[in-house]
Length: 264
Image (cartoon, rainbow, N blue to C red; front, top):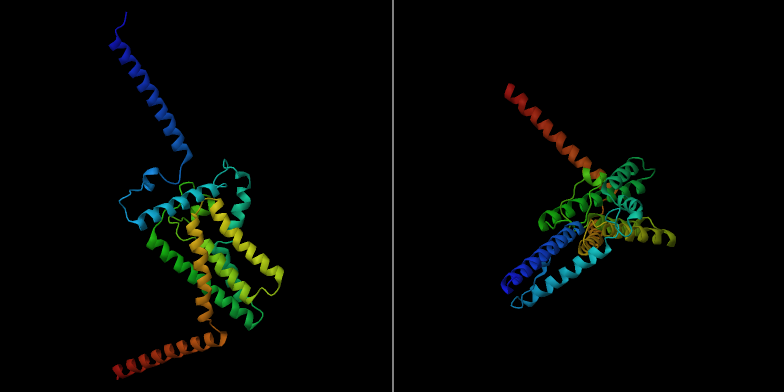
């Protein structure tokens, strides 16, 4: 007949074993779900300043909403079946096809006005690429944990998330086209719809957080204002190239005379 002490020890052993198996099971579930964040990251202490508490609350909302919107992060996601279509929309906002297409149109332009527009669009794309890269290197926010690498992202690795380059490029190009090229209502609706879909694709694929896309849209909207202020005309470009060429020839001519004088 077992004593009460041995029965208590056996019950404690069974409870400990059950707790260990439950923790192991929950650990496997947490590891497989690949969450955006851990609860420790959002721990709030009441003795912190109000600004810090508000910032942590907004960060929690941003992470929660971003996780809910990532329904095409992989094939097993709720809307994983439309992932190839969303990736196609995402590719339409990539910088490589935009730069190649713009430079090709610039070289093959039929009129001076068309070449001038394509020239400024090329400069705007380069400006957007440089500014987004600078902000990403400054903030250094990591991409969401559910972001899955694809064939395209293998060649163009993005380690940092803030801001979204696709969103800034979509906003800047949309405003550029609305101001310079879109002259009909249907064309305007098409441009705005494309910009919205490209920005949404970054959230559906879990490439970025909501704040990344929002800041990218605001950044791209402001970038066109900069391009509009420093708009480069074709005559101005020709004059600039002519001045630089003349300065180069003058320096070469002066250097030639210096060599001749040294020989004499």
